[in-house]
Length: 315
Image (cartoon, rainbow, N blue to C red; front, side, top):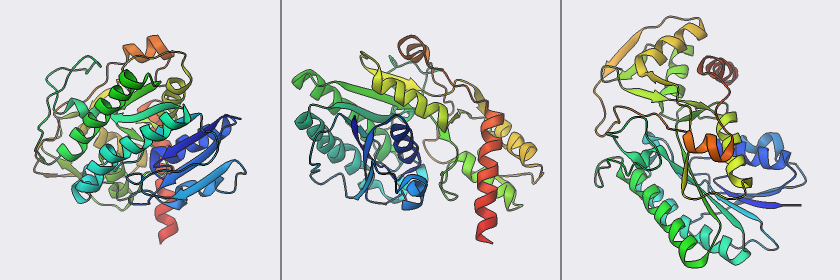
C-alpha cells in the first residue's frame, strides 16, 4: 500500500487531495496546524482506517515512523486576506516548511510534490503565462510574502533535485474553487457567492475588467494526481483552467446562477493586484494528458449549492 504525507491536509485543497489519495488506495498522513485549515474539512473521511490527522507545524521537524512513498507539501495560507494577516507564518510555511518536508522526503526516499502557485508570475507582462515565463514580481510589496515565499520554495525544491537527485515535481496551481472553501476566504468566488446568497451587492475591486481563470477543485486535484504518478516530469507544470474571464463577467454569472440580482459595488483596486491571470497548459496536456473538464458555469452551480447549504445551516 502506498503511503503519502500531505501537509496542509485539513485545508481546502489539501483535504480534497487526501480524499483522492485514499480513493486510490493510499495510506494518508495529513499534517496541519489549523491556521487556515479546519478539522471539518476532513470530517467525511476522518474515520477512514488508512487516514491519520496530525496537528503539527511544518516549520518544525517532522517525524513520521515507517515508510513514506510520497510527500506533498500543500501547507500555506493561500488567499490575500490570509497572507496579509499571517505574513510571517506564510513565509515560514514556504521556506522552513519546504525545507522540513524536503528533508522528510529525502530521508524516506519519497517522491516530492510542491504546491506552488500562479502568483510566482506576479503581475504578468505575458498572457497567458507559460512555465518558461520568469514573472514580474514586486519583492517587497503587500503580496510578496506569498509570491516570494513560493518562488523560494520552488528554488529550494529544485536545489534538492539537483544536489541530491530527488524526484521533485512542482505544481503551479492557478485559482481553484469548489466545496470546502471558507465563506470568509477573501478570494473572488467565495466573496461573490457569500454576498449574493446574503442578498448583498457584490464587491468588485477596481473597474472589474481585470481577468482571472478559475479551475474547479476536482479538475485541479486530477492534475495533481497525474503529476504525482507520471513517470518523469522536469520543471514546474501549470495546472489551471485557461478559460479567462473578467471579474465583471464572473459577477454577472454568479448572480445569474444564484437566481438573484444584487448588483455590484466598486472599491479601490488593492496594491499589486494582477491585471491578468491565465495559464498556458500546453505542458500539462503533453506530459500528463490533462486539461480541465468542468465548465465555470457547472462548477459555480455546484459551489453555490454547497455554500447555500452552509449558510442556511448557520441560520
